[in-house]
Image (cartoon, rainbow, N blue to C red):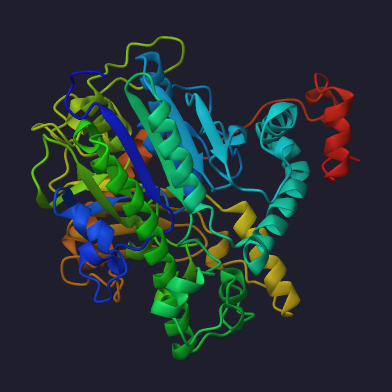
Length: 516
């Protein structure tokens, strides 16, 4: 074992977890006592901002230190390009690495598991060859060319069917105990310093908590009697009254309590076996969830605070226990964990982002950005306030499913429905500006209006105007699509693109309705 202090790394993502439903953030129900106990010896961040409101781009940012536009992992191109990751850098430094998750986006198909020696996805809705091998490569090729996207939409339809299954009791059994068990086994067998990443999905729809936790938090609620599909509500095809929203929140809290107990089991085992003091522990959410706020359900079609201001707790000897109010970004965890492990990014096999200690939460120079190197840093060069930047491209799978639910209800979605919108935001400690297409831009004073109840135009408030200016500079740095028209060149004949695909791959594509 290395003599470095806290050289091992445990990185835990509580998927779809709202900060305001957690005990260490002041929630009045004791949903997360284990996290509360962990918080006593950790740093609790009050203003941690996710770079997107859904799983794939957020994890890609945390694993690469890049903003979503830079790493490119999104639903139109649902895979991470051939770039270095946190896991690949640590593996090159002789770490044992493992990833255990029940989230469908964290699989070999999306390349988010690159660099992990051991990985297992407990997501079982689709056959394994959908997420890996030649089929994934074929999908990449198709998605890389705009003229072939109509073919890709057929697989989007398949993804929507998978989502429908998840939004029912069929796919709802928690895989969290298995994730915890596998993580313990990996740590026990590790020969060197280790990096374990886990994603726990309990708080993601649908909410079917284990009986013990349902009885404790939602004893009077039948999970089959409440709306478990956010698209039914967001399409206008299903109404939810105050009583039903309360039942939904009770089920959500029960899921949080189960997830917390399982995480507590892992943390207690680390302490009992003497490993906790040798481990940097990060616990965060990738995004939150809306339960009726702004008349929305789920975590799509918006960049409100319940989605992007996420919980973040870190235990490391160089961080003081207590609360931190300063603004931080989840993509900084890439630099923070490399810094904690004492690992420099010198590997030249892929285009790896170098360790930047001004983006390490352990550094006294955090966010000083004296020598800006990435779009967010450059955008803040002349800013009076500090800002985090958030991006949300048009969500194909969610939009497809939204349209299906609207159609089933006999509703035609208007062209200016927010489900069709692309969104970007600059989020400061005081001011926030959300740029959108199809729907009006929004601006908020978070210091005086934390619930984002009143939208302000930039000419009505100087902090909103400063946030707009920061977002404009960020957009110029990333060459944002809303600053000008782009172009895509490439072959238009599917057979030409798929010349290298073998017949077995073509047949599988035909079976899925991807090819004629």
